[in-house]
Amino acid sequence: MKKLTFISLMICCLAAIGLTSCNNDVEYKGLTNEQKAEAFNTVKGSYKGDLIYPATNPSNKTDVTDTLQISWQMNSDSVMTIRNFPVELLASNITNPELAKALRKQQPRDWKCYINFTQVQPVTFFINPTLQSFSLNYNDKDHVVQIAMLGNDIYSFGMYDSSKKMMQMQIVEAAVYVNGILQRGMLKSAVPFILSGTKQ
Image (cartoon, rainbow, N blue to C red; front, side, top):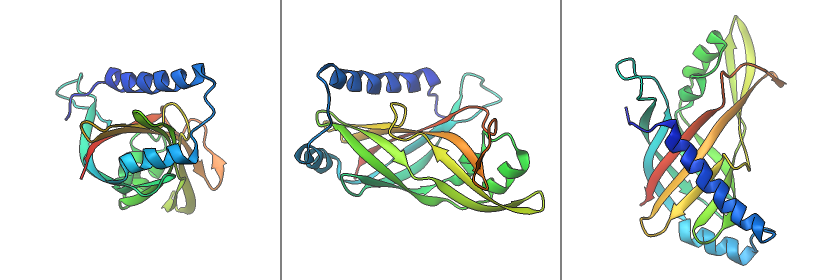
């Protein structure tokens, strides 16, 4: 497992908060269309890297994350696509064991996310992952299960280091809906996923 503690993840969050706070100090009103185009031209393209997610290691209690290879595409100044996101990871913190078991059987899928650029130098942006819907059968009944992530939020963001051609992003699993009804207590806690990779 990759040894990245949640303290490291919080540093990433604080960095994003700091950047947006600077914008607020000057009555930030959003980027112009020209500035959004400039930001997109800086980051556009394909990326490959690591998906870092919460996990336990029985032999090392300080090791609280694991990694998988992941790729994504910056499609436009408002959309990006995460390729073959491993859906089974969304089940790890779900408290209903039957639902979690059914979700783990789902195949990886491309995940469309809306983005909103907030700064040009360095490029930063909020991420709004689309709602993911699954037709699952558990407890001998068919259900429509939807996983919601935080969107346009200081904890759902991305940053790009143009000198290293490196992008780092965080998205957060936040809620579960079953047949259109929010399931309170279905998640043990919000679940962060970190994507860190370089432009290809």
